[in-house]
Length: 252
Ligand code: GLY
Image (cartoon, rainbow, N blue to C red; front, side):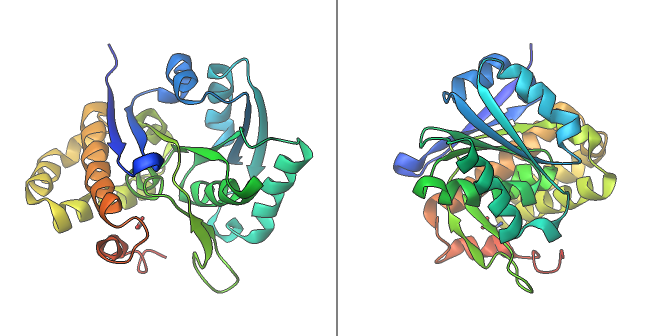
């Protein structure tokens, strides 16, 4: 039987679960349990949507699901493309009880999350990260936003998701370069917080690169656990959370 690892980000009334495992995005019972809304906005991009949007739609069968597909790339993480998302929410007259689903990597998660933070002064959103980097970092902790011209993440909000579905099967379509970028982030958690975990990564790097489901699930689980602990202590980055930015300015 398929294992689903679960952990909780503890933030009082903003607490939420992170679910990690294979084929979560086609699990009708699991998605249904965590997404009680009738109206859902599925935000994705033109690379990820053809791969995964249909299975999410099928798993959520009886809901009203409206799709928005943005072009793929960091250059589209802007107010202009966020406006498109907001326009679709308004045009469909979605109420405060809708849920925005962010299906994609960090760009989609940040932009969809910020749209959810602004629409009707804040509606729920669920993260469905499809890159390793998003699964271990950007989908967890509630940083959302867009880039202004010439800047990065300077417009945004802290808005925690209501649930994170880290489906390890989606990593099978991820380019190797992006898999490595995610692994570098996993290594970073080991380096900063947990030397035993760093040893484990070293011993399991082949399994991780071969996308072994159990190894990936463990790596994502431990990384999220370490990040969730930092976020719990310093949700709005007035202290320790800044440690997590190590290396991020070099990545772009
Ligand atoms: N990616 C750094 C943070 O979430 O704080």
